Length: 191
Image (cartoon, rainbow, N blue to C red; front, side):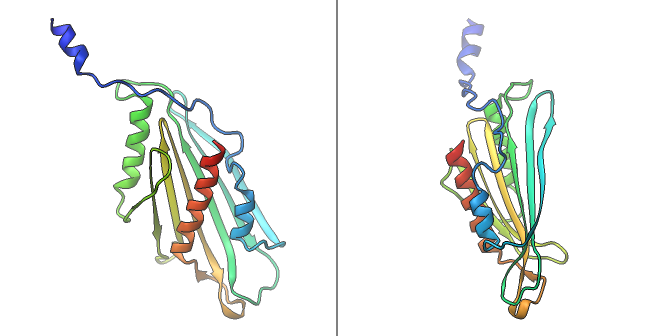
């Protein structure tokens, strides 16, 4: 009798939907990355590819691309941008939680950060935020969504050229947030 009562108390475990990381970290967002840099032909591009950090399984993949405009610039526009994408994808249960609960917990950690978050209608739950430049920290924006056992997060940071090509103007954090949302939507469509 006790066994029947205990069995009825456990919530059903949501199924794992994702089991492998996408081959391309930016999943078709290359056109958007070009737009973010105003289609500049003279760019220095550094890509950090697929860092997988396993905790007994491949659970986290991070990729980043840094882009800087080269040559003489005389008009306002992007100076440099760093776009980072991370995928958190637990696929196995452990003694603490199942994969979907682990993904929910990961997004909850992002939600509880000190920077105010805005709801984002993407995946089963999503949010976005921006941060102004503070000291040496660049201004930026970010967005994340969870779908079953997957959390995808995109951040955009950087600096702009000001009038007359003056360097190191802070990036508009609201624009960075909008860029992060656009990239995140593109990735979601390609998953």
